Amino acid sequence: MAKRRGWNMAIKGLVFDKDGTLFHYGATWMIWCDLVLEDLSRGNPSKKAELAEAVGFDLDNNTFLPGSLIVNASAGEINGVWAALLPDFSDADVDAVAVKHLGSLPSVPVCDLKALFTGLRAQGLKLGLVTNDYEAGAYLQLKQEDIADLFDFIAGFDSGHGVKPAAGPLLAFGEAQGLAMTEIAMVGDSTHDLGAGRAAKVALNIGVLTGPAAADDIAHLADVILDDISGIPAVLV
Image 1 (spheres, rainbow, N blue to C red):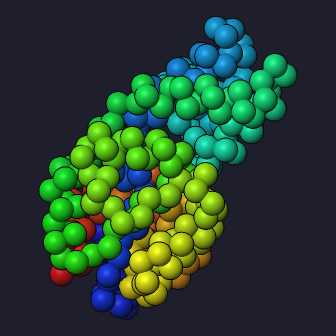
Image 2 (tube, one colour):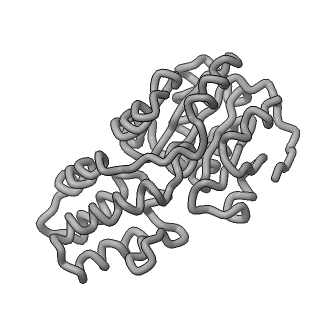
């Protein structure tokens, strides 16, 4: 689906979300969420259920509920919610558990990422990745796919630029690459991603359907909606 709004097609930079955009969301984060909840609850079923409910995770169906904090909030915000329900855990303790299980994440790419990003780089485009996950976790997943060196800019919630849907991370990408917002497109699967694009006043917001959101959920923020990021080269022609 495409909705043309008269954008400037002189795109020189692309900023991508990570989870649900480069990697299929559920295949990655459902496993992580269950591992972290089991660890934090110390095997107590009622506590695990309480922690799951607090962040919008449906234990019975192993899925994320609409508006889930896991899907939309930053890792720091999620850690704070869990720590508030765990008297014996500080934010730092929860963070340590969350980071420990990052290594358990199976990354399931939505397409041939190496081919896609090599091709985009060959067109002279600057590439950025902005996630509300940890910066270290983002590097790890990109390195596993052998694409980390194809990105000019990688930022997480802990990189000092703020978190989506605020404009800060996109503004930081533009400043680092010497690009105006009118030369940048934002690519993401959620309202937080595309909301950041709107807040930063980028030229083009590209939504993808490889995350939890349906087309109707992001249509009000997207200029273009694609099945996945493999369709981006055709959009930029």
